[in-house]
Length: 97
Image 1 (cartoon, helix red, strand yellow):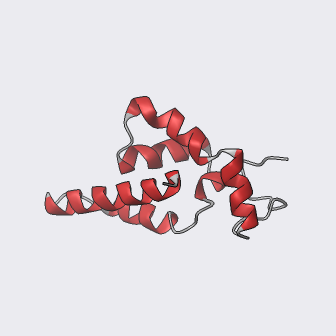
Image 2: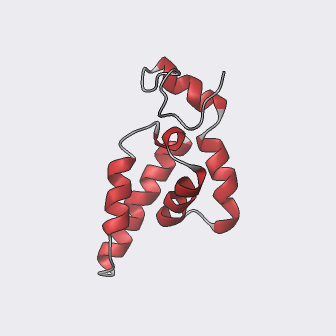
């Protein structure tokens, strides 16, 4: 399964968990909006990406590995093929030649 899809599912699960415990869901609601963009992790700084991954429930020891999988070249190439990102887009922080 696509790592990005797994992150979306994890965020949904975290939202449900927080709602059931009457905890603040604001961050995860905002993350849900951001995750509508499949190219999100190519457009944000690594520090922000790590915060997003932490908020969705990725374990501390898996943060770097998960981040790297989300920005792999094959993911980048796939998003280009789908027309989701333009390699000439100056807003992309992570790019490949």
